[in-house]
Image (tube, rainbow, N blue to C red; front, top):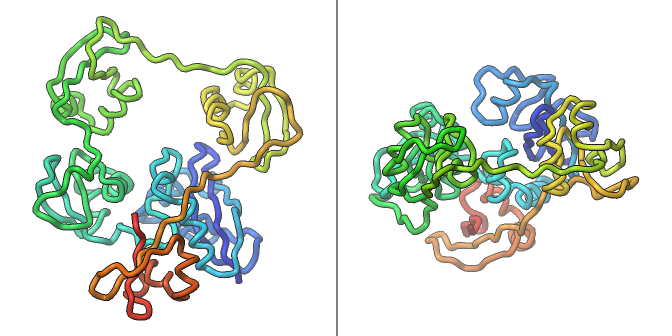
Length: 357
């Protein structure tokens, strides 16, 4: 028996999911992730972002590759935790909704809703219930809880209090004046607040924030916190010259005289290739892309990893005793600590343990 940390890729849009799987062989057993096995599963009531994606695109649209193998689940979870961290969850190309390393998901945990001033409003038995109530994704609320952000114009938390400490939250100024321009850049309207803008355009605050920050259209309009005589649409810089296509393991496949030629011959998107080249070691359509000198091999695709999270050891009364730099370090002294961190036990050797953010 072995444990693998795997990467499942949606070959249609390059969205990815990283997880841990127990298996008897390195041969593909049908498991794609998040409880889905293409040989056994029948997705009737999907509950997570990844499950909805598999139901929408079909099993054949997903490909699983092994990142690393382990002979015990603890080391596999440690490695997953290094990959699926807070920064990873903020990426736009991931299906993962919760931190790696076995942290219990928020899906079945009571969550509390607050207004943008931090005042308590009400509670929901789970993220699933809240997402259905407000018709937004579970992922959006989950990220709001994990990263102290807004979702559906509200603040969310798994802790109940009369008023939130707003200094810990990333809240865009709701009273900022927003100027609206049509797709030609002509000024059309002024909104006295984000709330007014969202109501008039029938969108949410996150749409407005992205439009202001990135200069993208929302509901057919450009939005800015600055008043211009004519709003200029940001121009996307496109790379020119010969481009080379590589497998994810870095081996050379073929070359094209331009990105446009690659787009036409492979029936893919020019901007997708362009972005993969600019981001460096990022893939598109399950391939790596590069400019310049043609090489027989390049650096294989690697998922960015960050520093491991620290573990706090506490007395049963909640007093901090010691801080461990990694789960592995902590497990040397407390071999069963992963059960506590995974939510399968309340304590270990009469101590409580939790990740330190």
